[in-house]
Amino acid sequence: MSDPSPPGDPPDSDDGDGNDHDVDSADAVDPDDAVERLEVWCAGEDWCPVTTTATLIGKKWHPVIIHRLLEHGPSGFNELQDAVDGISSKVLSDSLEDLQENRLVEREIISEKPFRVQYSLTDHGRSLEPVIYSMRDWGVQHLAPPN
Amino acid sequence: MSDPSPPGDPPDSDDGDGNDHDVDSADAVDPDDAVERLEVWCAGEDWCPVTTTATLIGKKWHPVIIHRLLEHGPSGFNELQDAVDGISSKVLSDSLEDLQENRLVEREIISEKPFRVQYSLTDHGRSLEPVIYSMRDWGVQHLAPPN
DNA sequence: CTGAATCCTAAAGGATACTG
DNA sequence: CAGTATCCTTTAGGATTCAG
Image 1 (tube, chains in turn cyan, red, purple, green):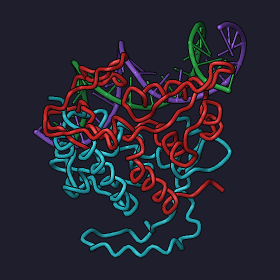
Image 2 (tube, protein in one colour):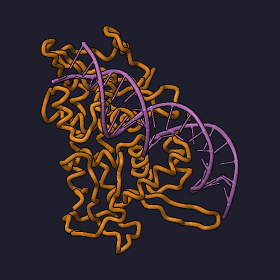
Image 3 (cartoon, helix red, strand yellow):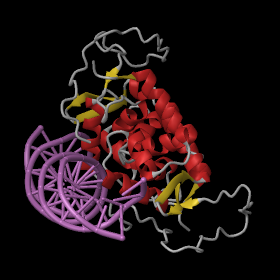
Image 4 (spheres, chains in turn brown, purple, green, blue):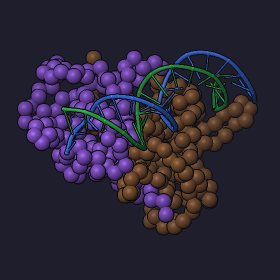
C-alpha cells in the first residue's frame, strides 16, 4: 500500500473527460473543482484500473461510508458514524481524511458555534455509485447474515 | 465496536471438508448450479451487504487476483503472480488462502511430479464479475496513470 | 453535546532467503 | 514450480482522552 508520493493535488491536466455531470446542483460547486482524472500510482509495471481502484476504495470502511453518503446525502460526523454502525470515531475520521485526499469526499464547515461539519461526495465520489451498488447487490444475492 | 471474529476467519470457515453449513430448507442447492450463501459476520447491529462484501474483497489485492482469474482462467501460482504484477509470493499466498477460506477461489493439485497447482474461481468467485468489472470501468473512466 | 487527537495493539503487507 | 520461513515496516482499528 506504499503510496510513496501521490501527486498530492492532482495537476489540472486535461479536463476533457467528456463526462457531463448533470447532477442536480443542489450544492454549489467550486469553479476550481472541475472533474479531472485522478492520477493514481499503481504497483508493478503496468497501470491497472482494477488495482488502482482497489487502492482507493479497497479499504474496510470506505465502501460503506460512500454508500451511506449516497443514500443519506450530506451528513454530519456523528450522523455518519451512526449510519456506518460499528466504526469508531477515529477510524471514521481517518477514513474521511483519506477519502478527502483522494477527492472522493468533501468536508464543509457549516457552523462554527456549535461546530458542525458536513461531509458529502464529490463528483468523483458520486460516480462510484455503480461500483458500490454492485457490491451491495452481490452481497444481497450471495451473502447471508449469520443465523 | 469489538471484532469478535478476526478477519480471515469468518464464523463458518472450516478447514476440513464435508462440512458445508446447511442452509435450512428454502435454499435447494442444485448440483449443477450450486449457489449457497456465505454467512458473513458484520460489524454493528444491522447486517449490511456493503460492509460484508467489503470484508470479503476489500483488501488490497483481492480484486486484482479475482480479475486476473476472470480474464486468464485457471492459473498456476507463478502465472498468477506474474499476472498480478507487483505482489510478493507471500502476500499472494496469504491472499489466496483467504480467498479459499471464503469460498471464492479453489485450489487444485493437478500434478505431483512436477508439482503443479491450479487456482480457479468458484461459482461465488465468478459471480463477482460485475463487481470487478464495475471497478475496472470506473478506474478507466476516472483515473489516470501518473505521467 | 460534536469532532478529533493520542496512544496502543493487532493485522496486513513486503523483502529476502530458503525448501520439497 | 510452488510455495514457507523469517524478519521487518506500515496500516488498520479500537479505547480513551481532549478541545470547542
